[in-house]
Amino acid sequence: MQSKKIEKSGGFFDFDGWASKLKNLKLSSADPNFWADNKNASIILKKISTIEKKIAQLQDLDRRYNDIKILFEFAESGDIEINEINAELKDYKKNIDDLEIKLILGRPEDDNNAIVSIHPGAGGIESQDWAQMLFRMYKRWIEKENLDFEIIDFQPGEEAGVKDVTFEVKGDYAFGLMKAEAGVHRMVRLSPFDTNNKRHTSFASVFIYPAVNDNIHIEISPSDLRIDTYRASGAGGQHVNKTDSAVRITHIPSGIVSQCQNERSQHKNKNQALKILKARLYQVELEKEKEKNKKFEDKKMDIGWGSQIRSYVFHPYQMVKDHRTKEEIGNAQGVMNGNLNPFIRSYLLNSIRKR
Image (cartoon, rainbow, N blue to C red):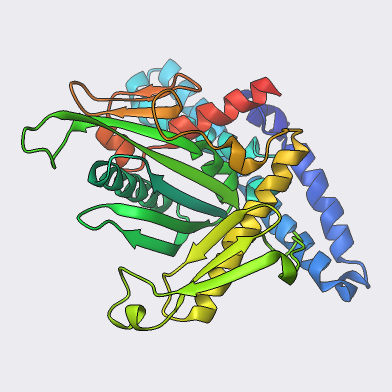
């Protein structure tokens, strides 16, 4: 059967299970009262579209699996050399690895967009430059994955780098994939800002929140919010400094603060700040579901020694190592150019083993 062939290809790939879910959802969509609840109908249609994509990917893997079997038969009969199959096998394995990552994402929030915030640690220009390097790394990864992103808030450093940047990653399983990046990232290099060319260690923290979509309701009472406006600084031209367009929202019960100054319109900044706040409150609820006793903000690690999830070493050798999974890549520049999937895959597989 098709499902058995795919199962041999890599595990986790339950073709019959997805086909059964799709059949049931399509039966629901055929109900005469389907559109009586527009919100629920939209959720079901999105699920149908997602499952159809998965099934198409599984069918493509199955087709390629059969093609490779035929190539091996040709090799056994001497019609082609074994090394002629290597490129096809390598590409096939990459497709399996990429699909496996997405198929093991099973939590409801995994398919949401992701709100990503990068904050430099202590160290001024060094850590601010490192934060911008991480921002560039994620933009490269987003391009490779055919995802989209939108900058929500960007505060440039005074000399170089960024003081703070928040952006939204949009696309299938954006949060499920990006959650592997949450934590403190450490870099070791010869500093371009040090006239003595000494080796420096810099830190930056990355926080990932699931964006709140239409099928998630976060109740926020207006009386629980304190909204402050102030004059924005940095990018945006002269106009951005002449009006109180920047918005800071404090959720009084939790103490969570979100802000945005990226837009020239105070109204747009307020909407973006509310989006960030809802995402962070939703993350708090997810943490409660996992029976963690501390609030999400208390769970944040200090940006310093001993708390990092990953190290990026550029001197005296090149190596990127994830301290949670022990995954290592010697081509540090390749990682900075967006080669993050080996780290994401090992993190997700490691999370499954701990369940």
